[in-house]
Length: 140
Image 1 (spheres, helix red, strand yellow):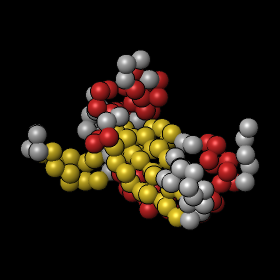
Image 2 (spheres, rainbow, N blue to C red; image 1 turned 180 degrees about the horizontal axis):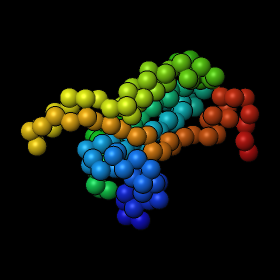
Image 3 (cartoon, rainbow, N blue to C red; image 1 turned 60 degrees about the vertical axis):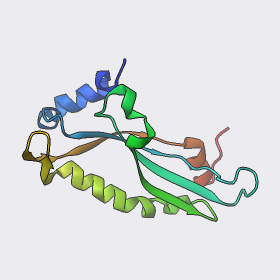
Image 4 (tube, rainbow, N blue to C red; image 1 turned 180 degrees about the vertical axis):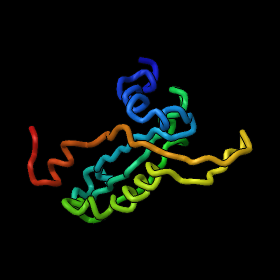
């Protein structure tokens, strides 16, 4: 597999929703979150949780380049967000739902036309050990 477009998930999306797959301008996204301590071992009480969207419509050599990733949210504070992480993610989820339904009147400058932009969240990339810490369960 040289690109995610070759994956079974990509084909499943095209087969299940052909109107989405027939429009190459529709976005296929992945959401990634990972908790870390920005101060290394200096302060174990402070955490930072970036939430990043990656667009997979790009060629393979551009998908994972930093300038094409969208930092949609940065959750930081003196302690981990714990069970309240959904409160932080709620506005992003609302935006993703709107994109799934379609945003009408998006202008395509290359073709000189308006179209309805849709997006699908295809994958999530998560820090499962950190989620275990949030829930109070540590997986070894």
